[in-house]
Amino acid sequence: MDFAAYPKWNPYIQEISGDAEVGKKLKVYMKPEWEKKGTTLHPRILRLEPRKELTWKGSFFLPGVLDGEHSLILEETGTRRVRFIQKEIFNGLAIPIITASWSIEEGTKRSFSEMNRALKKKAEKF
Image 1 (tube, rainbow, N blue to C red):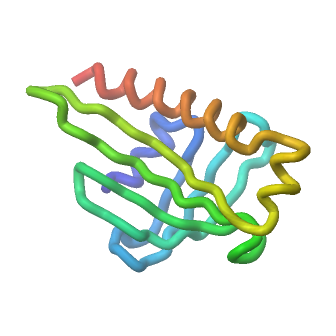
Image 2 (cartoon, rainbow, N blue to C red):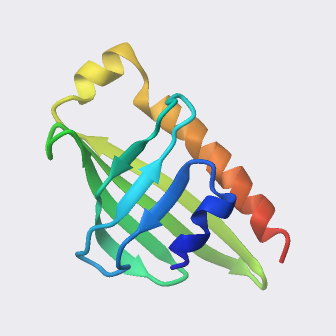
Image 3 (cartoon, rainbow, N blue to C red):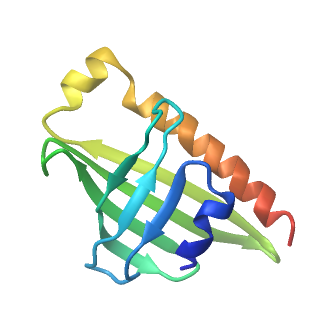
């Protein structure tokens, strides 16, 4: 995992530090397009398969209030071709309150799209 390179290309997840091992916590700085300041989370790695998958779960506020399971997945689709899948599953007590006033899924989707475009641009240079 080349976490050190994230700030060079990633407009959404701008910094990741920590040991890339299942069960370990990372320090992740994200700057969603709707936030001026950004957010630092400390998710725990759930799944890690180099060059295939990184999945972590983190909490906003306290665990169980607003949790997110974030996955970055690469699937080979042919010679020198891959499909990148990025997804987030939110759960917790605050979901009904947050989704009533603001669509967390829509905001996250916009930030993912921005990140995906940047990754595509970087990958196409190879």
